[in-house]
Image (tube, rainbow, N blue to C red; front, side):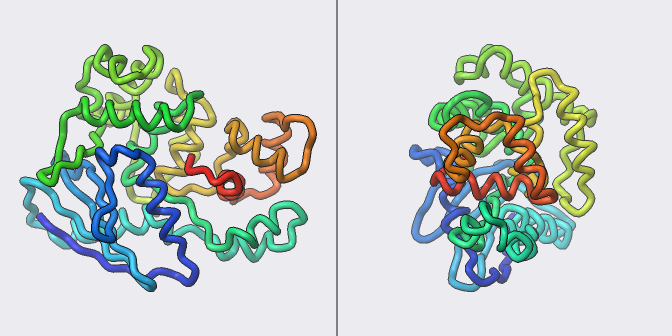
Length: 300
């Protein structure tokens, strides 16, 4: 099955941010840049698939190639692809209102002005964002990238073009814990990843891809009830999985480091101070944190 969706891009759209986020792995095992397009391996309805995104000055063309798949409901599949693409590209994020409202803020305003048009790149699925959040807890981005690659490869799904496809919850949940540990996850993280994968596969945890109906606070509470998942992991998952812009990322070390620089503080900024500072930007706390990340030239 092959589908195509074209969507218009707003003025000052920062396509390089989207590309950089998905090309963090220098090995390009499951994402690659080739001939002007971003290619990403993923799982679509249980089948290996490849998503291709091509940008020009005014639009993005998104193509999906699903291996060994057919459907009688092409209209539903087309709508699902368009929704996925809009979510990944951040096209429904209310950044215009954010920028206008906070333009005069004494600290964040000048940073926003330097980074106008900044959107939060989003993973292909909320589950992919959750896997990254669990993997990346309390380790460097470089280490998390390597572990993520090995976990994807351990699941064993590969598109015919050679890209490894990010597994779905069923594939992760079927892996033995020792295989995940061999990929580099700690025993605690492996258990957490298996727990959430199996909960999703059984229907006990719903990570709905439909952004328009997502009960963010409900999902956050469900995630926090799982052993091994704390506020940072839950809020990061909602940010990178759905583009939810109001999670508080005060537990993120890079956010606190950037805030210290922004405020010209000699002493480190505590989690409590960061939480209080971000709280003033609700409902855009996570977008404010993303501007802090960008000020450090990070793709966290």
